[in-house]
Length: 168
Ligand SMILES: [Zn+2]
Image (cartoon, rainbow, N blue to C red; front, side):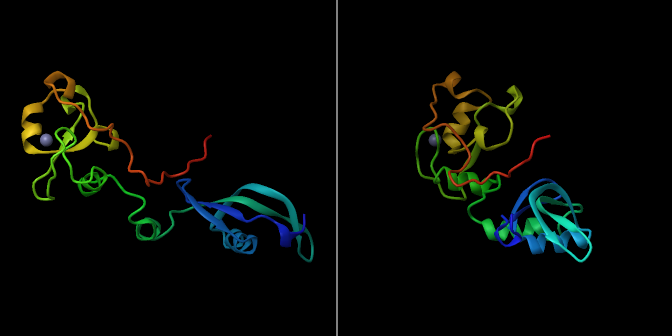
């Protein structure tokens, strides 16, 4: 394959987060600077004065990338919603997920669908917006144990982007 037609190189962070693609010349620059390790190579070579170098297909930063998380948050907001009180409020559109009443950011509470005392964890699939009345009624019980019904099954926000991990 001609280097000019070579596909780009996929870049992973030190924690195997997919950071996107770079041109192979940039990939070589990172390899030469000792910043990345090569995990896979293309079946294409570039020739230097003395030898042929396979073009990296997949590279990984050896050290944490400075500013990565700050930068990603800025780039992806509000698409990649980290789990937070505010983000759950946004996902549930400010409505109690049991009775459907509209709530303000000052008055809403968060409910563990499966209570913590029964092993329920604090993440997207187990947390919903809840009004104080429903929260009081529910207490430390599951919804079905107290006649409450979820309006919809809690899930990741629709535009949640999930990190891409390489197995193995
Ligand atoms: Zn309610």
